[in-house]
Image (tube, rainbow over all chains, first blue to last red; front, side):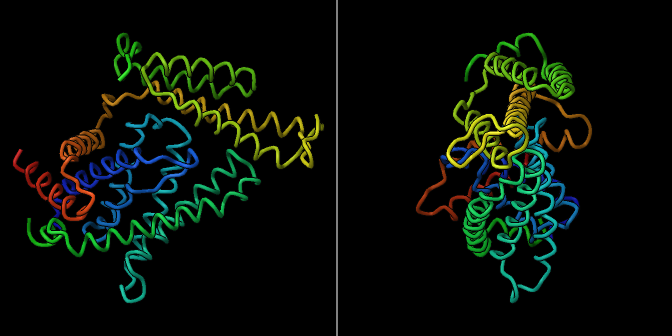
Length: 173
Length: 166
C-alpha cells in the first residue's frame, strides 16, 4: 500500500491514465454509439491493489468528471449514467477484491465490476430513456461488456505481474 | 480544430452558467415541438462552438430510443408496419425522450470547455489529472504494439517519477 502523503498524487496520476486510455478508446470504431470497451477501467483495477477504498472512489469521481469535461457530456444524462455505473461497479469490485485470490482472480473482479456497472446503466436507460423494450438488447450489451472486461482483466493481471512501476509503488516512494 | 466562435465572446465560466440556464429552460417545458426546436438551436450552438458533430450517432440515438418506445404501444393507433402498431402515445414519448437526450448532450458539448475551472479541492485535483493526462499523452508515440505492457510500463515509470521532480 502506498504512503498516505503519496495517495493523492497516485490517485490523480491514475485519473490522468484513465483519460489517456479514454482517448485511445476513442480511436476504435463503435458498433453502436453508446457501447464502449471500457479501457479506462484498467487504472481502477490497479487502484484496487494500490489504494484504500476512499481513494478508489475519488479516482472514479476524477475519472468520470475528466471524461465529462473532455467529451462535453458533464451536464447530461450520459454523465449521470456513467457515474451510477462506475460507482456501483467500484463498490462491487473493491468488495470482491477482498476475497482471497484462490477463489476469484482479478479477471473475475473485472468482469463482475463491468457486469454490475452495465446492469445499472441498463436499468437507468430502460427507466428513463428507452422503456421496457430495451431489455431485448440487454444480452448483446452485457455480452460485449463481459468480453471486453475479461480482456481488460487479463491485461491487468499480466501488466501487474511484469510492471516495475507497480512494484516501485508497493515499496516506499 | 474548428473555430470556437462562442469562446470569443464568453469565458468558460460564463459559458457554463448560460448553458445551465438554457438547460433549465429546456427541461421546464415538456412539449415535443419546443424540445425539438431547442435541440435544433443547441445543434447550431454546438457547431458555432466548433464541436465535432457526430450526425450519424445522434440520428441513430433518436431512432433507437423512438423504436424501443414503439415496441410498447399505448394510445391511438396511427398506422401499422407489419405486425407493429405505431401508436401516438409511444411515438410522441419516444421522440420526446430522444430529442431530450440529444438536446442535453448538445448543450453540454457547447457549455463545457476544457478550460472550465472547477472551484475547490476537487478543481485542484482535476487540474492535476489533466496535467498527468497531458504528460502521458505526450509519450504515446513510445507505445509499441508488439510490447504493449513493457512500453506502457516505461511510460508510466518515467512520467510518474519525472512529474515528482517538477
